[in-house]
Amino acid sequence: MLGQDSVQCLLNMGPKFMNEKGLNHVTFSTRDGALKATPAMGIVDAIVDLVSSGTTLGENNLKEIASGVILQIQAVLVASRKSLTHKDVLDITHEMLERLEAHLRASGKLCRGSS
Image (cartoon, rainbow, N blue to C red; front, side, top):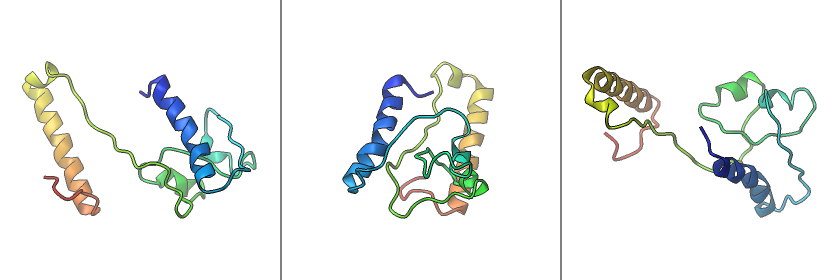
């Protein structure tokens, strides 16, 4: 879950990105709910959104704007030390990581130096 500081940081990134590109006439607002549907509904012209695979973008007839990446981020799997002392939890965690690594290798997205 994102903390308040993280959310505010993300909210400020869109306007900062547009200003750096010289697009000072763009107006930003925040919305809750089905953000990706708002361009098709005519509510907004474009959105700033966190994207992982791009599947829901395609499902909503949206596409990333060329040179439109505002921030490259990653997600990490975390667990408490205590939970990893249980063999069943450790086994499931290893299987999840192996499957993720296999998927990344198959899609050509595994970073160099990862194993």
